[in-house]
Image 1 (cartoon, rainbow, N blue to C red):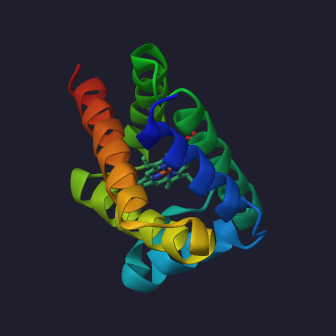
Image 2 (image 1 turned 90 degrees about the vertical axis):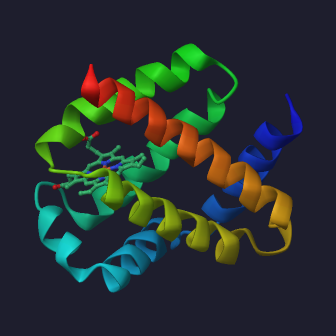
Length: 134
Ligand code: HEM
């Protein structure tokens, strides 16, 4: 596994040891962008938090396989079109994610980890955007 992929895996693993990961992420997102809260209506907040964390794990596990990235991106694009997610909203989600990881990964976090997460998230959003346009 290359170093950025290891950094993603290790930091996510440490952050997920904290049971508040999912709620901390959504609280950060909704505090910065309160109007987003009203969009999350289908599932309980616990279920949303679990699904988001599971999806991150799937993306990080497959990060070195372009087929996995495209497959995950297509699935997200398919459902998220219906949720009205825009590119700007994806940047908000990315910021809330990186900030939550930075706090909860604590000592495992580094500038290098931040660069790796930003690059991986950007690659995922690019793939989602391409899948949405297709
Ligand atoms: C790469 C970033 C994102 C990931 C990995 C992600 C992941 C997920 C997952 C796994 C679900 C569960 C259901 C499903 O798969 O459709 C979901 C639901 C949802 N997502 Fe995202 N999402 C992302 C970005 C966004 C953005 C930018 C928005 C902005 C509006 C958004 C809005 C929603 C909504 C409204 C739901 C339905 C929740 C509910 O009503 O229970 N997501 N997301």
